[in-house]
Image 1 (cartoon, rainbow, N blue to C red):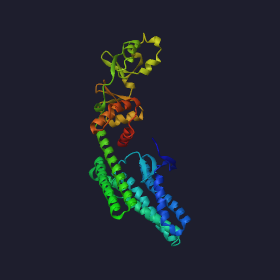
Image 2: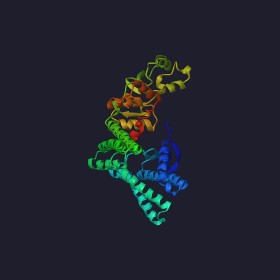
Image 3: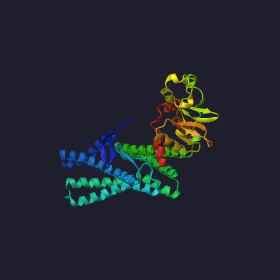
Image 4: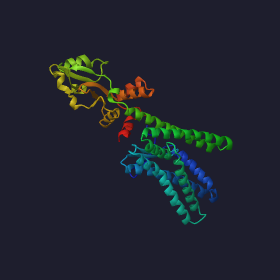
Length: 398
């Protein structure tokens, strides 16, 4: 369920706020407000609110840098979201080359560095020791820290994306590059948790130590997510249609009457929902129950099933050797409930739906998915929320 709040758009990119963003906004306001108390209560807290908003304005520009470079490469950017740990741009696809991936990764820190330089120039223009000068100076330092922190070489940070691009260029293997960059992110995350606990124990700075540990936890969680998705992508690329198809269909006589067909199969709740008609030893096509209901019942006694058959040349099909990624894309692009798999000879080998694909991946990756969940996927025609195969398959082929 969508819990983020849309607050507008920038350059056509939707902007969202996570409800927890207000927590960090409040903490940032408190931090700056306390720091500026020498200016008087009203001015200090007003400046605190302004600085907190400018901080997230800087984060927004940082993410916008990533987004605009990605769009310049023809990649769709779904949204930018501000949340507890800063901001994140939802970029739909991977860049097509290591060089382009590097450009997207470095764009955010580059924006932050440019903001630092511009703000430092502004500090020199403003009256020295004025509140505005102090605030602009603080904002400049924040942008420099933002750039340097994000360049730490481990996913999900920008430095991890830079590392991934470099490893991709060096090895020629994008998947292996992501795995190594994710592993670096996990190591750094555990290091951050250890550092946070040490800060808490040795200095008594509970809030600081907890925040560092939370950042480490966030890094581990997201680095692990990169690793899982990469394993899933690799697995998908190594599978073809025949690996996932089932023979969960029934072959019926194309010459029998519609009445005979209805009496034999429609009342049988254990029968599959997919039927293929054959005659003279050849598949004639698929039979749709919906088409049967469109025929007047008075004609069921005389009309043959052949009259409502959809020829194989007119229904969505794939070959046994078709990549499973292509199968998923075809299911999603045309919003199909299932797709028919044909043998090299043009006969029906099997059918594939989303449930069949999830079952295959569960077996390959040792995922805990029950048959009840598979059945629900088949009935609803949609993937589980945590397994958006349509998006993942598109990111591989785009």
